[in-house]
Image 1 (cartoon, protein in one colour):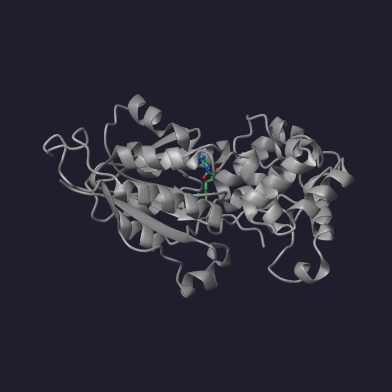
Image 2: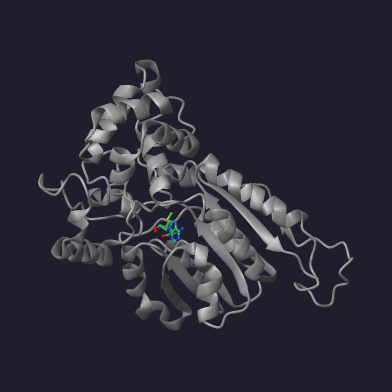
Length: 352
Ligand SMILES: C[S@@+](CC[C@H](N)C(=O)[O-])C[C@H]1O[C@@H](n2cnc3c(N)ncnc32)[C@H](O)[C@@H]1O
């Protein structure tokens, strides 16, 4: 199955893309009427089942009152639950995706000024906070990867299940798309991307098959080429054979792993003492980064700058892990199999 990282969003199926708009490039998304149709569909039918939502809500119960950054707003499922539960909370919701932002703006009547919305990538958190005069935050939430509406719309090109353009851009104004990676990277580069971003065993064979099949015109063709490159016995295990390669190409297109460490550090540094940073990750590459940034923050000593009352030589840690990584419950997995690979890690700024 496709594995978007938030849970289920119930979308009206927009149907198969007409033949002349499936294919190379991303022209389909630039067509205004189609875009408006998608936007209005999303406005009307976003329904959310955010991953580990009770655990996320509980995570923010003890934090100092103020602003929480939702760095991956998506369908605002977590944000809505947090705002409903904590009257004192204001959320700055960030997303690169215009559809997510559009949807969040439609929630203004429900939450008013308690929900601030920012379109952009989460590697600019300090800038977004400074622009609003926010010095310290109560914490931050990162629910990594893509959302179900992004996957469920074939037009976005994230899905190996339906024919769509080779796109996969979260921010549809950026230049690099899946088409550039699939039809443009040389075999060595493509093979590295697939191996590094998905631990795919057959990365080189897949890269060679993709290069030999060029030009590849849409996601259905790509999925078929990938499946055929994987030896038959391996193809029969572990779900759709194209899943890992699609994940790897998506990560490459959106530069997902490169911006994560800096963004996490920025969020931790902006968090007030007693505040928390929570991260939901969905594959080993993401989780390795989260673990290593959290471990570095834990081993850091509180600086005089972070706490002016502390003697610089004092041995005080900067942050602590709230608990070991947590997985969704079986009840949640039965309801929402898309949450299967989720792992929640939480870090807390330590008090003086
Ligand atoms: C898993 S979804 C979040 C779902 C959300 N928590 C909810 O409950 O509806 C991830 C979202 O983060 C966005 N995203 C991913 N990487 C991002 C980045 N580097 N900067 C900003 N947004 C990003 C995606 O566009 C997507 O909408």
